[in-house]
Image (cartoon, rainbow, N blue to C red; front, side, top):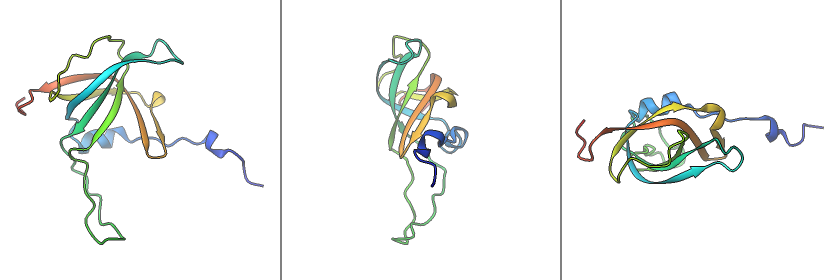
Length: 130
């Protein structure tokens, strides 16, 4: 008899180092809201929706269509910044970079990513100038 409920013992990890490298760790701020964990009240900060500006990864060819797979440029993703801040210091269009990935509080569940970072900083203006 195989192990039942084996999902309780498995963990899929997100390769944050690779992700930040291929995206050049530069994202456009789309929106955000304050965050407070119900399980761990000390985990607070804000959740952000960011748009990917660069994607240098080659995803290869789709075997079904024979076409090159699309990249993630202009796609969005959500991150939670656990820095205890009660204010989001960005406006729509600001360029930001992520700092301090927290792997022990980040999860991959199916195709859903729950990514936690210690901080986020503004890296340039919305016109793309640094």
